[in-house]
Length: 182
Image (cartoon, rainbow, N blue to C red):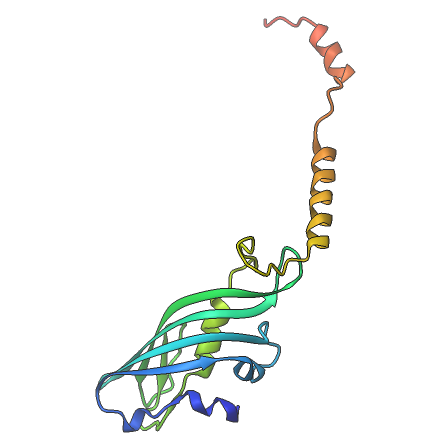
């Protein structure tokens, strides 16, 4: 985690008001997180840090790409991501229960490391299905063999699901019965 020291904000030395911090998130960042679903990426992140007397308001805005495996063709792709998240840091001498948008730190804390929050926001910004429209890419990276195989499997499954036009003889016999209401 020593390589994440660059993501520490010196909160004690900052004057009240809004401050901007710019970060580059890359392969070195993701290596610091064990079992990360992302191993590499290039993300530009801007952190607006609003220091107030009783709390800090952090606005994370980021945009870039992460390298991942395409869920459609299994090729390595640069998946575009972008998001904006807000985190409120309240000052408290007591240990408080945290939630997703509010954390608590001691008022005498010298610095605040935001690396974990950056990582979580990046991972949460990834779509559930890791695909994108790569048809417009100059150097399309799609695994054409896999796409061809998937197309054939889908066509075979669709053909197997089509209802047959054979009539059920049991229904034909029931239709012949003329049951009248009493």
